[in-house]
Length: 224
Ligand code: ADE
Image 1 (cartoon, rainbow, N blue to C red):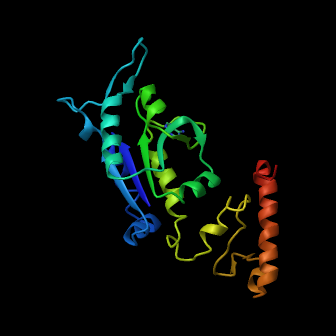
Image 2: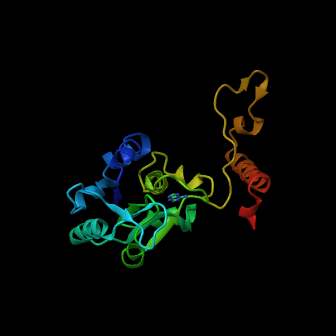
Image 3: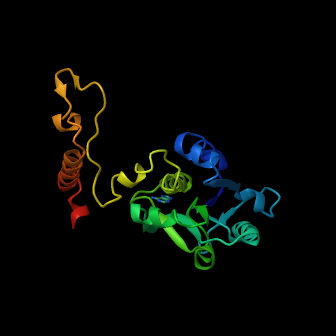
């Protein structure tokens, strides 16, 4: 899978892909994440990528030209399954959407900034707008990192324990059960007996019950 992230702040995206599961996935060749500086596609002397809003109003708007230059250059190299724009207006990211995105070959993520992007970009280049929640970030970079992280960890082979990503919270519509590790007792606080029993079927039943109980308690909306 290839993820091209277009941004005016490439420095913000240097670190997230350099560690742990995301780095391992890249090292194994499961994913290639390319961070592209939008300013490299500006025709202006000062490399500006934004301008005042027609009709007035506070805040700058991202211009269509550098974005079109950039997306068209990428599209000359390969076909893209989705051109995503990060925006609080978008479809809310959830596990189902991450699963779907993880099956694609090539995606572009355009990070929003300032007061937004010229509407013509959204009308003519963007195939999907995604929000990571009902709050406003200073820019789309952190949202792009969240989207990419949730997708990359699902790629087969990204997580060493094959079943690990499949047993995540939300993967079956339920929250994950509680987990414990050594010591079996700390400060008088004991690990549930059943987990030490070695009886796999009973343990699986217990975990499922715990998942249901947690979901009922913390996220009843998921059971609707
Ligand atoms: N840009 C600003 N806020 C955002 C959000 N909540 N989700 C995605 N992109 C954003």
